[in-house]
Image (tube, rainbow, N blue to C red; front, side, top):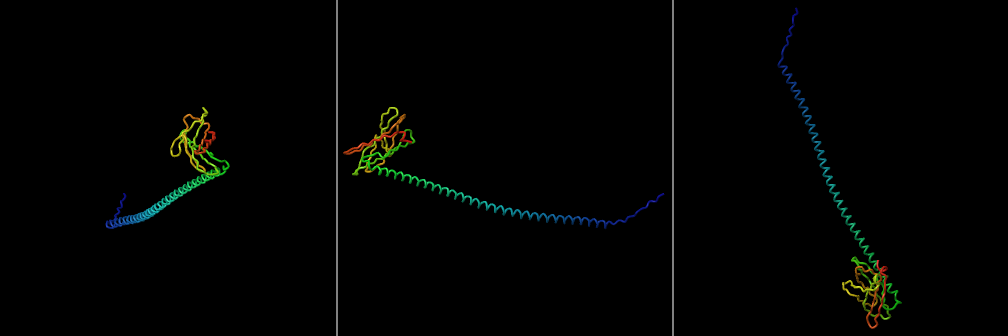
Length: 238
């Protein structure tokens, strides 16, 4: 028969309580230390993020200022380009005007040379006759230059009439003329010593097909003179 051994253990409740409290305090201290470390890390991170935010705000403000400066420069350049373009346009316009003046002077010189070179032909003369088509149907404007070469220069006056021949009936028909002031009639008046440029207009009837145009110049006075010149219509107009 076995005899059971009994183990008698001595109880220390105070010590166990102290040990438990120490354990709890150690765990609490560790948790607090972890909390403080985490809070310090979070504050450091927050401070770093704030610094980055401030740097980004500063960068954005600098970019905005730079963008404003660039826009102002672009506006200045666009304005300068507009001014430069306007200056070039003005120069081109002025140059074109000068070229037109030079061309007009050349034509004027050629005109005077033509008058001087015709010195051998005495009396009243039809120097030139030019016809240009206008925008209105059947409307034309003309320019006539009359000259006279006399030993004794005197004032001469008279009238100019135009007649045109239709391709169909071949009969000369008188035209209703109007000068640049709007006065109308069957003839235009002239009065000059050396030469005169006469400008006027005429309108052809509907269905009229011109073949030839005849210019008739009649002077007044004691010894009236009459000069006529005929022009082929196709060679007269462009």
